[in-house]
Length: 318
Image 1 (cartoon, rainbow, N blue to C red):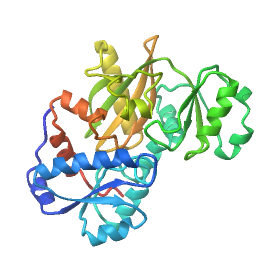
Image 2 (tube, rainbow, N blue to C red):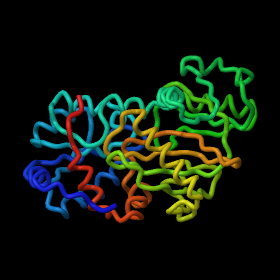
Image 3 (tube, helix red, strand yellow):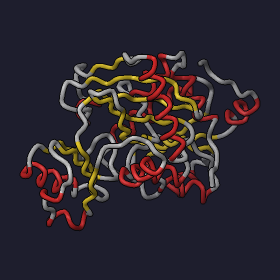
Image 4 (cartoon, rainbow, N blue to C red):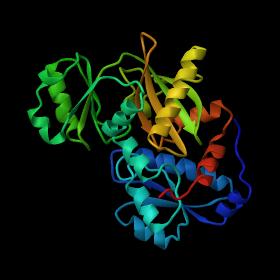
């Protein structure tokens, strides 16, 4: 699956001022800066006029001052991946990359995304939602499934705030920790298995990659500071049926949330051979450690081609 050339569209965008939106005010600020820098370099090598836009509370003024005509959204996490910036860009009538407001908001909230997965028949692990306001009174005895329990803040990315609890004391502490981050708290039955990531680009599943972290799960440390101990297997060592199944599930999850552009869909393949969907990342990382560039490269799409392809798909969605 090679690069797509769009001819007149490509030339038209080269005449416009592209803003690479990166940074932001959340726990993924540094990762976003790396993503934005890599993408900007790739696009400049293809002849696009790209301005680095560090996102803050004055974003609207900066976009006007820099005369940004197309926005490449390279933000991760809250106030960037969750529909907030997308809504501003819609209001300012600036075409942008990736998902629209609704898809961004739904995918960013693990609880609502999971409800949509359930409603559309996608396989998910059993769960319990704890309201952030009630975290202090949480009783571990109310959990309707056994240990271990995965505890996640609903609206954070890059595995920020996620814990695995193995007993009641650990679960109470994990809920307290998650309450310090954004959103309500999602408790899930721990599914032991292999983590499979699928890249979806332009409504097509590119391929499946298996992540083998040195630790118990693919947390922030394993993603960005593993020192080479995390392994990435592409193509994932799956049977033909397992591969076909996870590509289909990933595309269904991408479509169920109304995603566009590129996404990275996470799933677990358990010891019985069953898949459980975890989440959809609507602005996946584009650093040297990121999975989408690895998957794209594995199917013949260079990083430069990938960046250009995403830019040429920029549009208004509202």
